[in-house]
Length: 392
Ligand code: CA
Image (cartoon, rainbow, N blue to C red; front, side):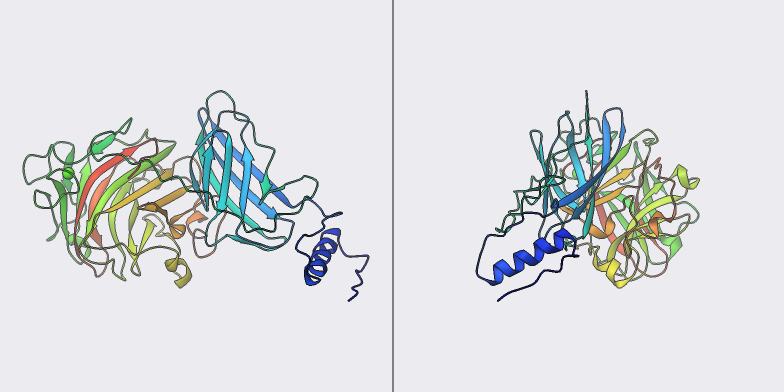
């Protein structure tokens, strides 16, 4: 077999075709002499004293990859604390990012975007030694290995025993200090606008930790909403506000729009950033413009998750108050449809990013609000809010 390679083809296509010919001839090794570098990385950092976020765009200039990993080394004292659209693990100064399920395939010329947040103390120079599946980016074009990429073990988030170690958190409540059935002290019943049959009470029959939790019986219809608000002012929590709570729902999230966490937001003139559900899956909603995350298209809804019922679920949020950035975890899973970043993604955050002012939540309300149909009995326990990531 003889294949003529057109001279005018870009060199990387020549390399790909050469590889195909060699593979078709039974060779397992590919020759990449003359190939361009295997990848390009755009690393855009937004930093402040002690912290930073980085938006990373990786472009595959080599053969298509079914599963990718990007390695780099920090020369400063950066420490990654969270990431979105990729699983990022740091060991010492070495960092590896592995594509998520929905962006794990990279065609030749294809790109993947992901982001991360971290801390630094003395220096934070941008890394310069990126490699994609072992191929240095901007390097000499060493071909990628022919063995499938290995997925490094993911480090589970730290586990914080409920009620035992809240660190610097400004809200840290297991509700064990509640003495009566009516919320008191740091938690106050509130039913803004109107009140119907919805109720909220301290429950001694169901608890995630200890013997007490917060129980909400929310009814269908807007005025049957019921919320319990923390008295803690959250205005200075950030730059990323981390929220962790354990929730237990009785009824599956309905098709209609409901809310069970409401965060009054000064960037919306006090209107709320809401966590709830629609079309049977978790969603964020912004009261001022009714934007949803994800978009409520079938594709968008499929990228979110239903909320299991009858069991305690660990729900966590990371809300960036300085830049477009919002993340959500259900248990240890970072939910792809509940992620917003600086790059609009159709079916996910395209609508959400139409508003460019970052949120500035000032308070936390837990309860139930239905805008059409949908009622539920639900419980909250081990609720924590702070400026540092919080484990389940
Ligand atoms: Ca408790």
